[in-house]
Image 1: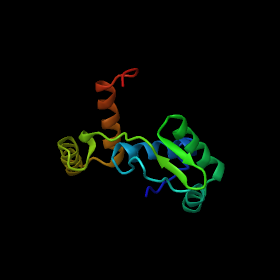
Image 2: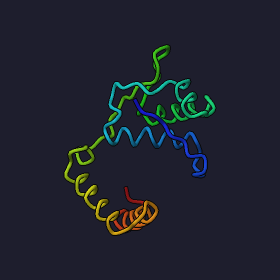
Image 3: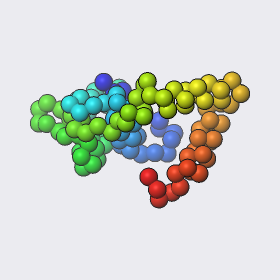
Image 4: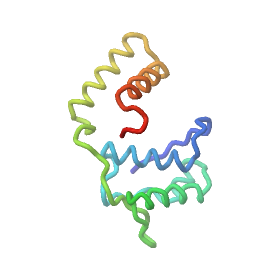
Length: 130
């Protein structure tokens, strides 16, 4: 079961944080077709967000065809975003983990790694390409 974490200082709308975290879990294979998302009540209890915010996030995921709401049962994942390249045992993931270890050993902090990642990502995936 996914646990949403809300960063109120991020400047990103709360419902978008929920959408992004759900998609990330789908990409990493942590949420698969048939899995149930936490109920709005469970998310509210865990994060202290407004129930309408959770429902807005779930509607967005439903609009994108990633989940479906089943009356009285909950909201279920309908599509996988996982790639074999992002699985836990995938070579690319292992290489990235090794690189992260080298970055930490070189004295880079999380913000340094994030900045480097964003810069290299922008070089490799210019805006407008996906």
